Image (tube, rainbow, N blue to C red; front, side, top):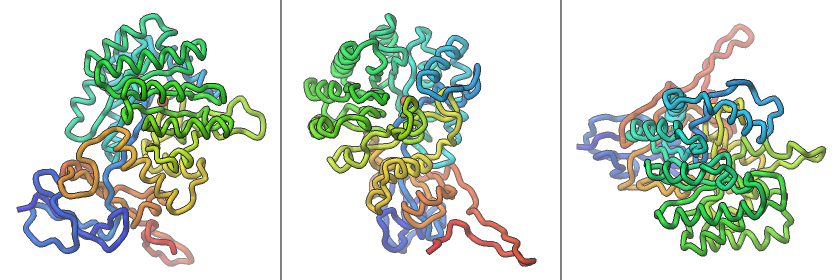
Length: 426
Ligand code: FE2
């Protein structure tokens, strides 16, 4: 007896609709017209089924604080950091946890079941670490939350940062973060990369650093990060987040840098919504876009995922934690409108994100955990075009979110018709 059969679902790679059989929380089979008894049957109605969305870069401790204690009037990264510093002394673990739980409800409703969140460890009380470790434990049946120890105020710049970061790791935070471009000098940035990667190597942990989140073409910590990964044998376990300086670097230098990043098997996370709004702020016209070289990095064989980064916090006053919105922005900013390129952008918020996070049991294949999202569309490119409702979200074969298909009643010329706004348009 099967636990569940999801009937009539289209797979991301195309072809005729299939049924998905689930047994003991895992995918047992994917093929047309599966026979057999199941405790529950769902009809996907010929819509797309995907593995869940993955947010590879987020800040769960600052989310939903928009307007507290004031809004970011300049809209710049540095005013955002200053604003976050104003807010931090009043933060309690209780309030951080309540906001994070609210955010996760939105995430799950939109089919995002894995999130990597950076957690600011600059405050020695570590309220965000305490709060988010609780959120991680409580939501573990429904959502994979990875936490990164993030020294937002600098690792060498803030005297207590090292001790705070090590304590956060001792408490169970599982990834080592950093912010080398925010250290006082280029040399101190490089030194912070060295020290942080050594901490990760000693403890057997992955690394995910905010790296070169600036328009300065001479901010070159990604080079240090790639070298440290190779020197310490951390290939494939180090992620560079943002890397916006790469947008502004000289092409000759990038021609050497990308192969170095590939040798180090560096993972890359771009944050299109935030990069396009925060970067290029000091430019006159023409204004740089600031997003890293997604197309070129992906072409070189690197895993390039997308993150949402912020939702309603000191850096970004918008956002609904919909990873399709992120992918949609990414493909526009990166001018990735070819069909294969659009698919790369869809993968950046699904399968590539899962590789960056090292998620086990992820994907649509027998034996994988039955984490599934049914969208009101027929293929990944339609998903990007429409950002449609998530009709079903399943975790380990159990429906944890559902909504009715969207329909519109149109009244024109005295007649009313009802139609599906997500139906194929051509
Ligand atoms: Fe970030």
